[in-house]
Structures are given as C-alpha cells and as structure tokens.
Image 1 (cartoon, one colour):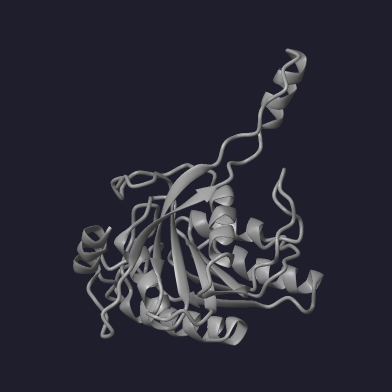
Image 2 (image 1 turned 90 degrees about the vertical axis):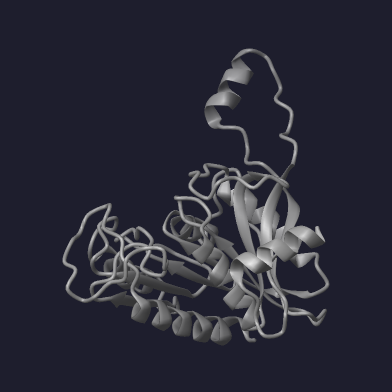
Amino acid sequence: MKQLVMMLCICLGMVSNGWCLETITFLSEPGPHSPFRLKRAKADGIELEPKEKIELTGYLGKLDTDTPAAAIILLHSGQGLQNFHKAWAQRLAEWGYVSLLIYSDAPAGVEVPSSVNLSGDVISNTYGAYEYLINQPYVDANRIGIMGWSAGGNLTFSLIGTEPPPGRKIRKAISAAAIIYPICNPDGGLFTAPMLILLGDNDGLIQKGHCRFFKQASEGKNPSQVVELKVYPGATHFYDDPKYPTYTGNDATTGNSAFYYDPRAHQDSLDRVQQFFKKYLGQ
C-alpha cells in the first residue's frame, strides 16, 4: 500500500505538507433487483436472494489529523475517472475536507484505464461511500457534502431529492452539493440540500437555458431552496480539465466534440466551490 500511495503522489504532485491521495477500498451494497427481474422470478416461483456487497476502489484525501472534519463525496463524469477529478479531490483536502473520489464499478485493487466509461450503480456506490465515511473517526458525520461532474452531477440531483431513488430507504440528507455542467430538468424539483451549479454557455452537451429554468422552478416550488448558478461565457463541457486545448476567447466551435480548458472559469470555479462548502459545511 505504501508503494501504491507513493506512486500516486508522484503522479499528482505533493502539496506543501507532504500528504497525497490514498487508494482505499470500501463495501458497497448493490442496487435492488429490477422490477422486471422481480416479476420474472415471481412468475417462476423463485425468491431472489439479496445481492452480496461488492468491494469498490476510491481515492481518499485528508490532512494528517484525526480531528473530525466535514467530508465530500466526489462522483466522476461519464467518461470515467480522470486526473482532473483527482486534482479536485486533492484541492478539497488541502482546504481541510476529507474527500472521497469514488472509482465507480472499479474492482478493488485493479487500476482500470481512465478512458473506460464505467457503468456501475453509482447511487449504490455513493451510499457505500457515505456509510464508509460516517464510520471514520476523522469524519464529522453531520457534515457530508457531494460534488459531481456531468453524468455524476446528474445523479447528484437524485441523491439530494426529497424522494429517495427507487428501492432505496431515505438516508441522512447530504448537507451541500456542488454540481458541474449537469443536464438540468427545466421543471425543477424539491431537494434537501443547497446547490451550486457551474457550467459554460458554449456547452454542446447541455440544453442552453435549462439550468436557469431549473433554478427558477426549484426556488418557486420551495422558496427556502438555495440554487447558486454560474454560467461562464464561452466555456464548454470539461472546461476545468487541463488536458484539453486552452480556450482563447476566439473559439466559437460548438458540439459534442468541442471541449476546451478555460483557466479563468476553472479558477473561478475553485473559488466558488471553496466558499460554497465553507458556507454550508464549515471548514
């Protein structure tokens, strides 16, 4: 484990106090059987056994202290786990939070190529990560946040909704949610946590204006609901991933394959996320 952690430090770069992300494993309770499978089993006179828990991989970031701190669960985008997700997890830990980046559906101890589009039950995995965190002595179980990108951000809406996902029992509410370039339902909804939504207005994967309608509709349904929204001019999907060409301000291309890194939007996002979690989770 020491060698693996050391290799990860070299990959990401170490911060001034010398800590880095640590690879961990945790148990996740798989999702319920589908209605179709339950119906088929009933027709065949079979009683399905509960699914066994599975062991998942995650990346944990924390300062070198056992003083209970707020924790944040991170859900990567649909393209699979990328280095910029790890960089965010590391930055959150630098700010004093315990960060747990879920490697959704990755077998424990196996490094799956980052380009793989993981299709596990992310909601189940998030519950598993939640249970893992609240049982750690260095986590304040009353201050749990969540952060998701793209497909991971879309699922975040379900995780903080007033109605639990199908087949799920209500769990303790997440205290705050940061959601990066999600697909917003313009009809809004009822939610249990304040939200910060960040996206670009040149995102070819998102229906323009829907997140603004989502904010208005959600706050209309619940006046106490907080939906902070920032739309970055010219920014595309994955604007916070430095592996893409840098946006110069003259790029007008749109579409699913047009991704640019926008350093100004990225830095502003870092500042907004830090202040948002500080406000609702403390530090």
